[in-house]
Amino acid sequence: MERLRIGLIGCGGIANGKHLPSLSKLPKVELAAFCDIIASRAEGAAKTYGIEGAKVYTDYTEMLKDTTLDVIHVLTPNDSHADISIAALESGKHVMCEKPMAKTAADGRRMVEAARRSGKKLTIGYNNRFRPDSQYLKRVCARGDLGEIYFAKAHAVRRRAVPTWGVFLDEEKQGGGPLIDIGTHALDLTLWMMNNYRPKSVVGTTYHKLGQKRDAANAWGPWDPEKFTVEDSAFGFITMENGATIILESSWALNTLEIGEAKCSLSGTEGGADMMDGLRINGEDLGKMYTHKIELGSRGVAFYDGKAMSDADLEAKMWVEAIMEDKEATVLPEQALVVTEILEAIYESARSGKAIYFD
Figure 1: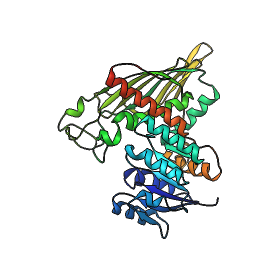
Figure 2: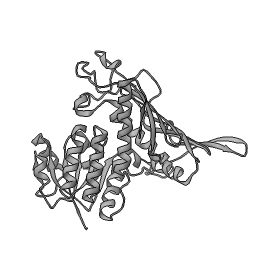
Figure 3: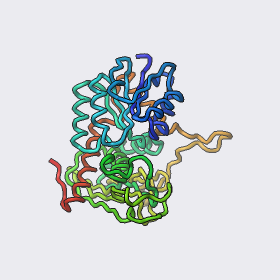
Figure 4: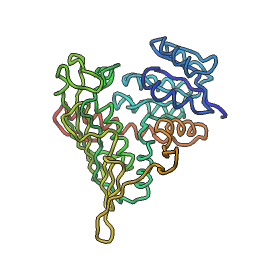
């Protein structure tokens, strides 16, 4: 396979802010088809990023009939991820679906089964795995430097940054608020570092406290309380089959100064690590404690700050390589499914007031 022809379903913010700029940098990629329910968005994306003769659609089922397409990127609201991804897989295309995998765990399981039946690759857009600090810490964990990681925190806390555009505040379309939007990134990162995908039980709480306020301070301007139908913060206490514990914290609006998004803290038998002030590794040596702060850049060189490839660029590059070289994708659908199952359990625990146990 010398070149990949890619079609995008959903040409809104995540397409133009992440996928299209990164994919357009790859020489072996042809952005050949664009679909959006708003025709002008698909036309605009095709004009800016498409190859000559790129096709534009408003109906994704028509796009999937194109047998020349190799890959589909599904960049739509959460409630349509599963149906579109499954249809794309069954039409013979590899699929990159934006996070979260699906609105429900049942839909996520359908996606995994469709990938297995079709023999096509399915991955989920957890781009924070591709940050320089994440890549470095993953190597540290894989080498065993931290020993057995038995306690972790997944951080996705904003003080006041509620997304007021699109369908972010619509529970029916999204399935939830900050937990399913940014908590999903932090949980994915934490499970990946621990290489632990066997949850035992979950206790969760969700709150809709600050979302009821009018004229509130917010990074993107005040929200409309009438349209704010999702939680403004959510928290989970997760135990794993091997006895490990994970605390997940997520918020779009919370009265706290302890903020951090798509970060994790890890505690193991041989050492610990966190991403709260850069990347720090801690432990003890010769009877003394130490903290190492990892320098991820290359400073001191004129006109060059050592900036690494962006997480979105590396994600796109490694995804394309996985297809063209027939390798395993970095983010496996089975891993993403566990994230969705845990998030769903947190919501269910919050609704029922009971612990949720996994089979």
